[in-house]
Length: 77
Image 1 (cartoon, one colour):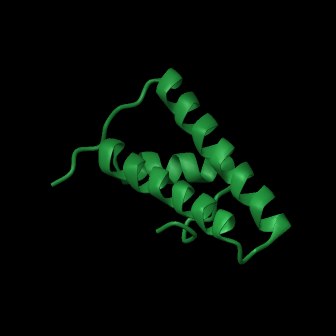
Image 2 (tube, rainbow, N blue to C red; image 1 turned 90 degrees about the horizontal axis):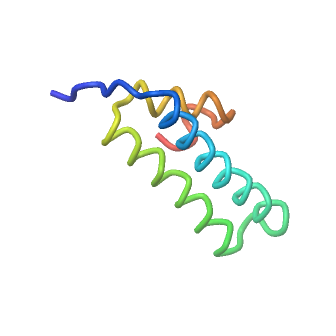
């Protein structure tokens, strides 16, 4: 049973900033070449962060961060 963590505003902001940075990096690589190894790496990094947020802070936090940066809910699930 996973317990949802209560996040303070600073933690939420930091997670959103990091997630947003990874999303922008992925978008930039995708614009250059959608099939490149760099694009796949960027996508993997973004998904790994989302899974880490889910494991550490809970599913609600992962979904909240994904929604805040405009990352589709099913893109990294």
